[in-house]
Amino acid sequence: MSVGVVITYQVLYSSISQHLSEYATLRAVGYRQRYLLGVVFQEAVFLALFAYVPGIIFTSFATKLARDATNLPVYIDANKAIVVLLLSCLMCFVSGGIAIRKLQDADPADVFY
Image 1 (cartoon, rainbow, N blue to C red):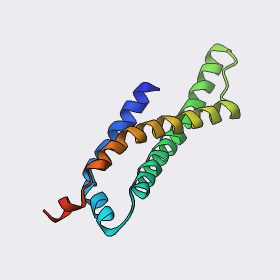
Image 2 (cartoon, rainbow, N blue to C red; image 1 turned 90 degrees about the vertical axis):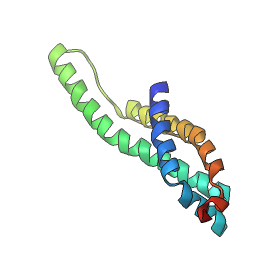
Image 3 (spheres, one colour; image 1 turned 120 degrees about the vertical axis):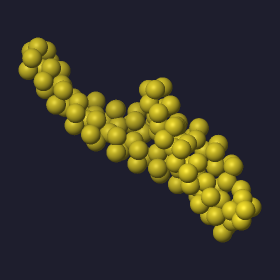
């Protein structure tokens, strides 16, 4: 979980850094900090969902292979899948919360330099 937080943080932080002038422009136009936070958290949710779908598909195939090879009762049921989805979203929210500090650097005055 902590490795996922760090990796997701790096992705969000680099995205914010690359688009810092756009965030500053939005602040200069009149958007509040709350809106910008919503954009970052929305990106975090997208990261969680886009990572979850291929991950759960791969895990389903891997558990089937393990079950067939070892005759162990290894299954990914709906409850486990939902818990993993919720934990993935939590992980990305934590990363987004840490990466938001970079938004404080979005100064509208820097846009015109």
